[in-house]
Length: 154
Figure 1: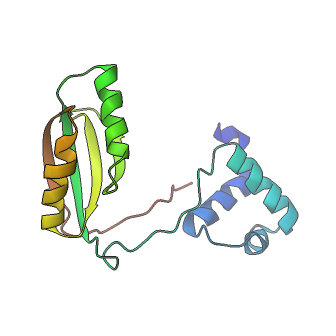
Figure 2 (figure 1 turned 120 degrees about the vertical axis):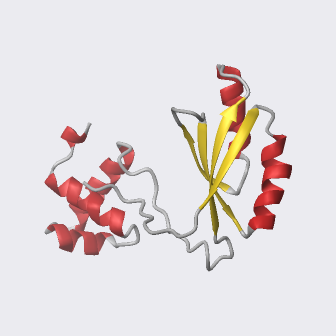
């Protein structure tokens, strides 16, 4: 699919990955085009699914959600209905910001933000604990976030 992208498309995606708030005018100047063709390229990249959405990366610590947890999940059983139920239930939990179906010893990996340990304990007992398809969990607490980027190196 990336064969549909030329050098300018990749350059636009790199620039947007660094700063999704950059204006079309500034993008145009950086890729040596006028704003109109850049706008058309952006629309094509959006419609083609290369750009999923534009986001602001928030500072969790400043917003009092400084505890980051990676929670490994094992399901009770492996079948389509149980997996679908799990994903549906997890999508409703605001503390879960990322959810991956993984291979290995666990079935899913969750990235969770909490205010503190008490908040996470409440989350585990009262929210995660109500998800019927979960067989077991294993939590890993982040001591220091050394790198966090949503950008893809193109």
